[in-house]
Image (cartoon, rainbow, N blue to C red; front, side, top):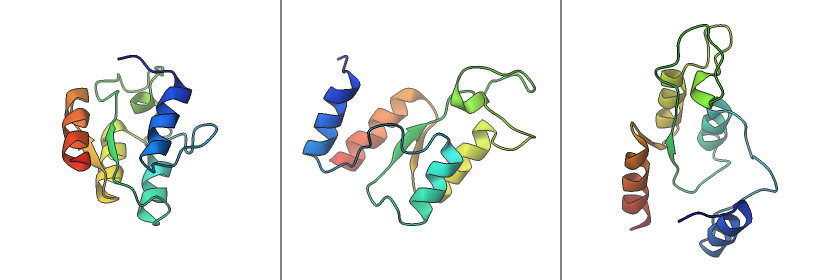
Amino acid sequence: MKLLEYEAKEIFTKYGIPTAASCVVNDADAAAAFIASGGFTKPVAAYIAGRAAVPGKRMGHAGAIISGGAGTAQGKMDALRKAGAAIGERPIEVAEHLKRILG
């Protein structure tokens, strides 16, 4: 199934999941901090791409955006887990987490 952003937001709204006009946070560390602060109380499932990124090489996905040695894909996964998010090691695992979370 392919959804446009507005279609997904309509579905989220139907189930009480808050959305914003644009991205709420732009990195996993900020998301983890927001979740941990109690700012977002719904269950979270995530996948961080880029674990195989070549160190020092800038690539176009979030897992590869590393600044000064901080913000590695593994660090992002750890921060999200610590905040209570269910992390998929593979994309299919996110779907499995969501099935479990949503019943």
